Every structure is written in structure tokens, then in C-alpha cells.
Length: 385
Image 1: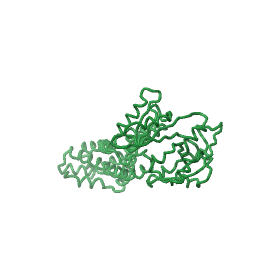
Image 2: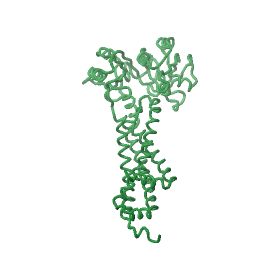
Image 3: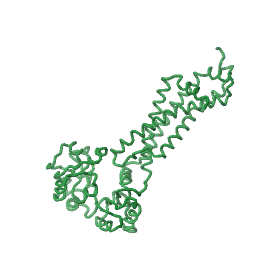
Image 4: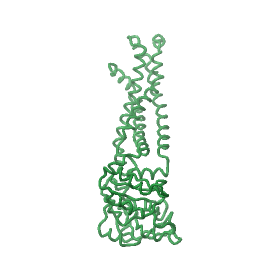
């Protein structure tokens, strides 16, 4: 565009005002890039093909349990390498504020979750100790636990002999191979499912989910369909999905992520419209004599209108692009600590929506100042000068 240098000069005519406005736009699109990526991830089930592990839960809800006997049936499905299972426990330590994920798990749990490193002697101790428990290194450091300690866990769902007391012997501490994800993976406790099943007062022979490893990740979709077919038309129908999809559905039990994100971004962009609209209106108001001079030099009304509109879109575009790029740099670091709840990159859908918002907001905030510049009368603008 031959007038780009002119537009650029007008945009930075008041550097302080422009930079402060750009900072607001950068912040808005930084939030948009991260939050909309979360919305897209939570609204997308994702492809099963290529998944290393599948999670099989009740089709009705992840709060509904499944019979443990289903494990043997799953093992017969072609393409299944190994199966383990777990039951949500949900205990607390000393105070409700000290909540952390806790599960009762099968003896082969650490054979399936090979990303968690547990010394062989501690694994044997866990399998041989009825009341044994294993915790992540981060959780052990947080509470100062060491092997041999007794953890006085308190049940919130499953009492034992009429009491909420579940004292567990700490027999092992595991580490995550992926140090970037260690903050999340190492903050959990696991206990023996057999002990939980025998001791709790309410349910027997039930698990919350099965974790399935595959011979070939490319066959994940076929294996998932075969697993779900085992219980089709029964009162315990299952749903097999990727680990990340399972973790997202778990989070959805607590809140409507899409509604929350949409509400936040609506408020952010409404504020951005007011701010950038005021900036553009003030910029044009200050330049009325200069715009009149442009018309005196032969610039047509339509050309002046487009100069102001391009300036507005450029202002929003510069801030939006920087904000989205910053979000793409920050998101991978957050995703590595979120155990699959956040996408590792900004989805293409978010980039496209962001580009559309940049153009839309730029046009909306620039249209009134641009129309004012177009209708400007040279005589009126230069009167008194």
C-alpha cells in the first residue's frame, strides 16, 4: 500500500498513547489466545488414532463405577497390550485445604504408567503391603513425608468400619520421567485397590476406570470401539477415550469451561472496544486540520476514510499479533504442568478466530472516526487557522 508510511506516521503521532493502547490490546489477545485454546480443547474430543493409552469409563458419567471383572474381558480384545484399573478415593490429609488426588490402584499400575519411576524394592513393598501407599516426590516434599511414615488419610466418600480414618503406610515415593510435568504427576497418592475393596463400607468389586495400553497406537479407534462393544446394551455401558479427553471430561464435572471462557473474553473485548475506540476518536479529532490539508492536496473523501480505517486495523493488528505470539510461547509451559488439561499449542481455530477479531474490532472502532474524517469540510476544518 503506497500510503502505508503515512498511516504508520499517523499511528505513532502520539507515541505514549499508542504504546499504552497497544499494551492493552496485547494483554487482551494474550488472554484470548490462552483461554480460547482451552475452550477449543474442551469442546473437541480429539482423534483416538495415535493415542498411547485409552481410558475406559462409564458412558453415563465418570462418577459411575464399573465392575472390576470387565478387566478380563478387555484383555481379550485384539490390540490390547495391558490393562490396569483405579478407583477414585478422594481423601484429605489433616485439613480439607490439603486436598490432592488419591486413588486405589491395581498391582500392575506402575507397569502401565511407565512414565512414573518407582524403585523395584519399593514397588514390591507396595504390592506386598496391604495398607501400603505410594506418593509422588513433589507431594512427599510438600508434607515432609518419608518412607516408613504413617499417613493418616481421611475419607470424604468411603468410610471404613464406620470411620473416616484410613491410616496408610508410606512404602514408596515415585518420580515422573517428564520433569516438565512433574509438578502435576507427582502430586498424587495411590493405595492398594484390594485393601480399599475389602475395607470400605459401601461398594465391592467396583472401579472408576480402566487404563488400556495398545500394541499399535494407530489402531486406537478400532480397539476403543471393540472395548465399548463388550458392554453395549447393558446397564454398565462404557466409553473409551484418550487420556487427555478423559482429564478434560473430569474437569467439566466441576464447571462449564466454555461458558466461563466466553464470559471472560466477552468482558475483555468489550473493554478493549471502548479503549481503542476512544483512542481512535481522539487521534482523529486532534488531526482534523491535517486531514483537511490532505483533502486540499487532492486526497478524496474515500481515500481519507480508508486511511483512518487502515490505521485502526493496524493498531489492533499489531497488538493482537504480539499477544497471540506471546500466548503461543507461554501455553506449552503451562500445558506441561496441566496433565493434559491444556493444549500444548494454540489450535488453528483460535488463530483464525483471533485474526477475524482483529479485523472486526479494528473496523468497529475505526468506522465512526473514519466517517467523520470523510465528511470533513475543508473550510470548516481550517477556519480560524
